[in-house]
Length: 325
Image (cartoon, rainbow, N blue to C red; front, side, top):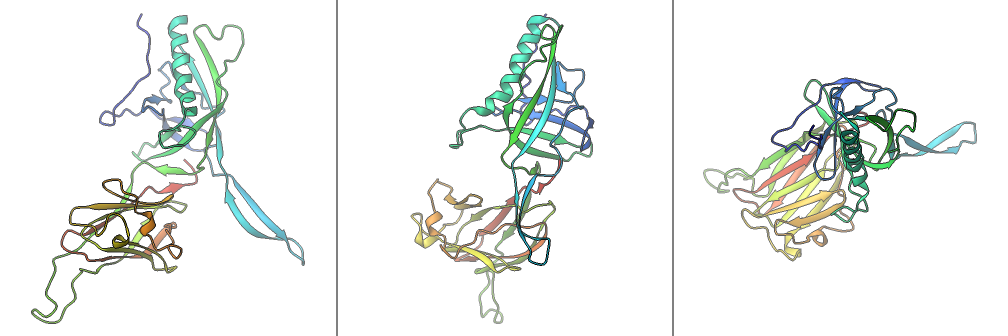
């Protein structure tokens, strides 16, 4: 009989396992995505591995540490609230048609989780996998996970022959769940006009304008900005707090942004790079620059591009973040 191997599904051919009832979140379809991109359905009860819903925990609200000071009149006053990394308890059953098939499945599934402990290509000491929770309405949220422990069999009579189960502990550096679908805002410079023809007027060559950005998530997000030239300076302002940052392209190794060229500004971590890989971060107006976040709800913002012309554009991209799956 052929052995079962790990399913690897390309983004063009995704599969969604059937939903099952999971403690803390209700009915959902769960998929684990290993660092190599392999997709492991976790809620298909007819498969050779699946999640044991009983015993799952850690999918609810993020844990917090609350720091407080005693108040002289009694009680205390909260001074600081800090979200903490979370751990997810994830029981998994693995089986096979015979001992050799079970052994291969056990090794493959365990290896997919243990692979997260290898150094990442981006300099991180780990290569997180992704736990993806999809709802029947088509929405899905993800969280990065790193193997923390638990890939051990039950050690009981009859286990380890054609079936066994393990209770994994997964460590999440970022405790928040991230929406799979990104939110985007696009603003582009309109057709330029002569200031005096047919009457005094102002074109959009300097200001792309004010707009309102909506964050449907439950916690702050740190957006990524992509600016398409031409432009000589780029300024983004959060109008409700007056926080802003400016990237002066004339002060960078790249020079002014020409038509069709792009620069990408990341707010977490703070970073600015051209489309050819040049580091432009020194061009930010430090120390005044504040690479601000977007809180839940509506936020008024203003995009300003100096030296803009037809084709100049700003694209704002972010993934909403949530407390729970």
